Each structure stands twice: as C-alpha cells, then as structure tokens.
Length: 317
Image 1 (cartoon, rainbow, N blue to C red):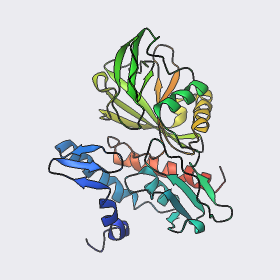
Image 2: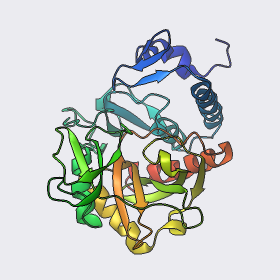
Image 3: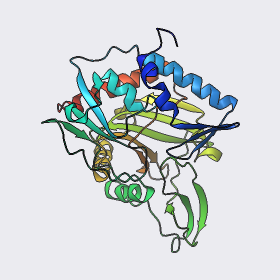
Image 4: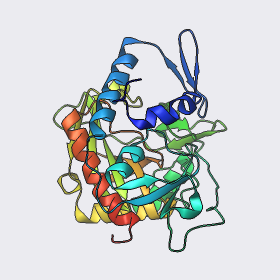
C-alpha cells in the first residue's frame, strides 16, 4: 500500500479480512453466513463502493471532535455509520470507558447485549435497546405505528408474503393462504407498492433515521419480478418531506421507538390501493448508501446523516 492509502487500511485491513472466507467461486461472510459469488456485477458493486469510500474520506469532519466506541463489535468501513460518524467529527476510541458515545453494534437479528459496565460519566448510549430486528418484531411495531401487517397463514385467505425471520435474507415469496406456517418464517400482508407511473416496477422507500427522525430517503426501484431482491434498477435521493406527510414522519418515529432504534434504516412501503405506509424491515447496522445511487448524492446523504448524527450523539437533537 502507498503512503496515500487511508490509515484505516494500513492499521486494520488484516483484521477486517478475517470477516471473510475466500473460496474459488466466491467469498463467505463469516458473521452472517452469506455467500457472495465472484461475478461482473459483484465486481462492479465493489468498484462503486471503493469510489464512495475514498470520496467520503475527503469530507471534512465537523469540529470540535468527540470520541465514539462500538460494542460488542467495531463497525467496519462498509457500514454506513463508519463514514457518517467520521464526517460527524467522531474519532474511534478503543477504550470504551473513555468514549463520549458508545454505540451498540452487532450485525445480527437478535443481539441482547447490555451496555458495558464501565462508562465515561455522561456518555451517550446508542441502539442498546435495539435488540430484536426480526420480522416478527418489525410486524408488531408496524402494527403499533401504522396498522396490521402480520397475518395468520392458517386463517388468512388469499396471498401473503412469506419470509425468513432473519434480517437481510431477501428471501421473500408470495404464497397462497390458508397454509400451514413453516417454523422460522413469518407471514405478512402483500403491500402493493407498484409505481403509479410504471406498474411494472415496485418502489421501496428506504428511510435513514437518527433519533427517531427520518433524515433522508432512498427511492429504490426495480422490476416487480425482483420485488424481494436487493438489485435495484434505479435509486434516487429524496428529502423526507418530499415523500412523507408530517403525520407519517411521526409514525416512523413511533416505530423506531417501539424497537429501540436510535440509528438505522427502515424499509417503508406505500400501498397504492389506500396510500397507507407499512414498515416491513429494519436494520440497525445499515450498509450504504445504496450502490445504485449516484456518487454525488451518496455524499449529500452522508453529510445530511452526519449532521443529524452529530446533533443526536451530542445531545442537541
């Protein structure tokens, strides 16, 4: 590596490589077990991520600085919080007892971790109440904030979405009910989020939240046949008030409080039949911005999130 290589890779690259198991046809993410094949599309995504990573490093961090620690795991560079916290003026502190901010960070659906025992007086704790982002808990919280999402597959009549409890599985499918439930799977009503301007596409409203408030929205669009995949045809950046009403933004806040999410992303769908919103997924260890978004807007979103995160972490929001 050259002298121009960011210090993050010089000091931690070997450690982060241990997160992956490299094979002949692809790599395996040790933590989640996900298999990523070597393919032109994956290599294109890797290139796009590096372009964002190096560009984000040129964002001048806000001042004065503050320190942040992660527990039980340190956030890696491919997680959104890594670039956002740096731009917000946060400096990584290995000793949790000396950190101004301590963030609960574990890329797992269930993470019942308590805050570390020894903390700096006045330290800000983030996401320690976000212990369960399973689809069942998301359905429950959606029911509180917006309306009923979950269905009983044995009693429901008609189509339903069947998906894994595990976060980021992208394995949803539509099944006909009534049907016998499969252990480890959840069942939700089918939200018709097809675009009015193009019924062959669906639109997810990926919303980044800080302190329960929507900060930015990624419009993720793809063909109906790929509705449950994470391969987008088009991604656009929008401000929350361009997409949601004030009441809807308050409802999103209710949802985040229900699952204890101080920082993270939620997948919001708008049903074209009645215009109502439903949150179908939540992620406390968000990766992003989405690969399909253009680089200038990725940096705009990073700055917006950094401003909001700094205010929340320092207790001024």
